Length: 308
Image 1 (tube, one colour):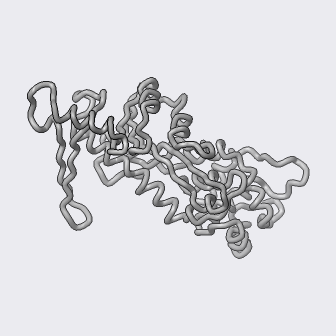
Image 2: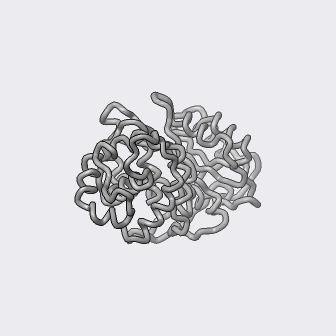
């Protein structure tokens, strides 16, 4: 990170509340959080590794953050910080810092901009220490911006976290895409009640619903041509031609709201949450390998990685 990037990081972290008592403070809270975030960018995957990296980069970090005492935090300070950090405040702050200029390889149309993917992700490193952490998030398709994230209560299905994540959120004009694990009537009713639209996947594990939908589309109420049922697109990628077919889609969106081809594009945009958010957090920032599991550490690392 260069000086400009450090300055942007410090400016953002200055808004974070300091949970420590006034007595005994020796280093600025902004500086402690900034040092930890800098170490994450440099692939440090445990508090011990962060502390070692901070010690090695002490001169650079002091010059960048300019602490009053001209020193860097110790390993013990780093551990306390990741336990005490206000996770909801950090998530809200980092959501505003997610780069918005990134665009998907597909054509970024007004229709695609309405698409938002909803999915969950396990933090496997915390799970190895008997601290299973499942985070569900809402990601905008075209920019891959994380607009919201919550942790699912222990031993609860991820749909419980999605309901909490969407509660009170403005969904008018948004099209939420969800995979088969989140195809639940209660979630569909909640999205509808909040004036949103949903694209859900129905697979054979929901046998009755799957067969009813298959029967419905195989027995159209009036004679109609084949395009009523399918949208086929052919693209070139990965050194080959790819043909994609959208066969069944039942939605309250009318043809005037969104054509069949546009619906297929929105559904393909769902993979932005996997390819451009979850993959980056696991591979680039090594989130799955992080061993930090106390306090709010597992949940706090996710918004930092997304924003950085």
